[in-house]
Image 1 (tube, rainbow, N blue to C red):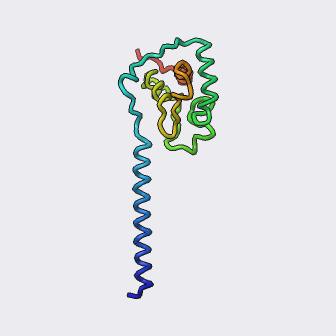
Image 2 (cartoon, rainbow, N blue to C red):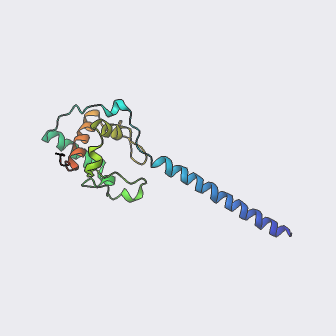
Image 3 (cartoon, helix red, strand yellow):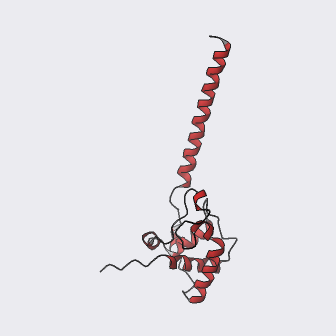
Length: 148
């Protein structure tokens, strides 16, 4: 076989190998970025120390509009102007089924710790602001009807 043919075969093999490695890296990235949140049990049980009030909701709304709307959208549907550029997509905060399945402590933990692509707000917002944000986020989802 001529040297040129041997080089072409080697180049194809190298290209196929690089494509395979790239696909493996992407698959691992997708797997690790799209897994459920792992919130410690202690954090889940943590109650919100801020009582719902007009002033607490207004403060939470102000924080939400400043920090969250780019991804979660004005109404919390996960449809903000930057949402399409992220994977996984931002959570819809108006999904009553989902929101009723998480505790205030879980929401607080998620806001505080973040997880790519969501930033952590532990150092950006004081604790009281994060709890006010929890109250506001809760107010976005309709209250599911109680079963009889």
